[in-house]
Image (cartoon, rainbow, N blue to C red):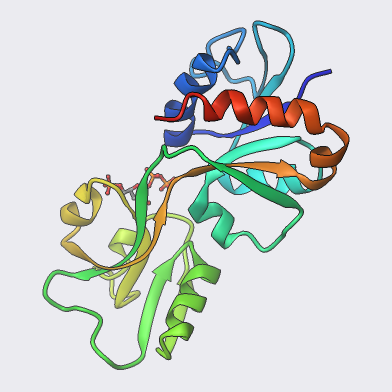
Amino acid sequence: MGLTIALNRGRILNECLPLLVAAGIRPAEDLEGSRKLIFDTVEGEHRLVVMRGSDVPTYVEHGGADVGIVGKDTLMEYAGSGFYERLDLGIGRCRLMTAAPVGLGLGSGPLRVATKFVRTSRSYFESRGRQVRIIPLSGAMEIAPLMNLADCIVDIVDSGNTLKANGLEALDTIAHISSRVIVNRAAMKTRFDEVQHFIERLRAQIK
Ligand code: PRP
């Protein structure tokens, strides 16, 4: 039996599919047009499981998947540790940043921070000795300052268009993000050859 590979649906999937295909791991059917979540590969060796990014580390930690491809932002936010981070694919590049309404900056007083990156934001501001109240949101962070829910946000910035469209400007970079390959700890031992082969095939495709 091959490996079960957990993939972060959305932007990361779009960028990592060509890499997987070039590495000889081809889904047996079109992933995008399907409501299915589990896909065989043409070679029949591995299977691909498509899920929300925040579930990828959970599946890999608990052995529901042997390996996973997920953004570093998700890994930074994840509290568990039952996996190894083995490869930086160099795709899905973006930055995790603070942002505030244009011209307002972050000031120096207590801050209300709207974000879905609760743990990462808390430790970032703590490490700077900054007093903050984190306001957890699962989306639409960009409008939180407009609605006076928060003074600033912490979010992923790629082109910057989302911030711009909502009257915000990016301020500090908390982390440079890219997609990583993670491996279940037990699989790293019991299926070492298969895992290593998978990683080397992907590594060979990285520019
Ligand atoms: C991210 C982020 C912003 C957007 C930034 O969301 O939350 O909304 O991308 O990209 P930009 O700088 O190019 O405008 P994403 O589309 O990844 O979806 P998500 O909200 O589900 O995370």
